[in-house]
Image 1 (tube, one colour):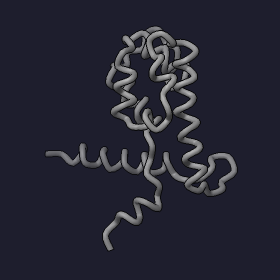
Image 2 (tube, rainbow, N blue to C red):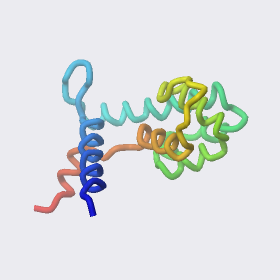
Image 3 (cartoon, helix red, strand yellow):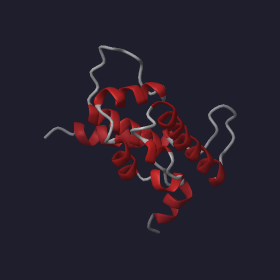
Image 4 (cartoon, one colour):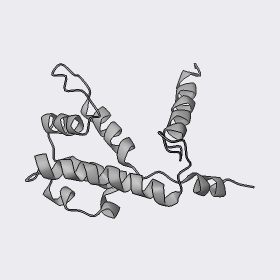
Length: 134
């Protein structure tokens, strides 16, 4: 068997690590735990504001939920399952995650994976280092 799946997975892990690196993208200054939590809460509140403005009857419970109940990827997916494909595509367009291309062919599962990876709470690097064995 070819090593491509294992290599691809390791490259994705490296990308995920550097995507969530605890540093300010514009100034280069390190971010502490409070700054990272504030960024995470801002992302969650942004998707809730979009849901409140554009999908209110359908996503009412999601738009009014607290951040702690929405940050779990399983719960986020459960809240967003009620959207049909057109509404889901419109949601990611409002969040500027995808272009407004009418000929786009992304699957529903792919869109959910993008949404969940952008809005899940990441473990801090300090917690991951402390979890490593001696």
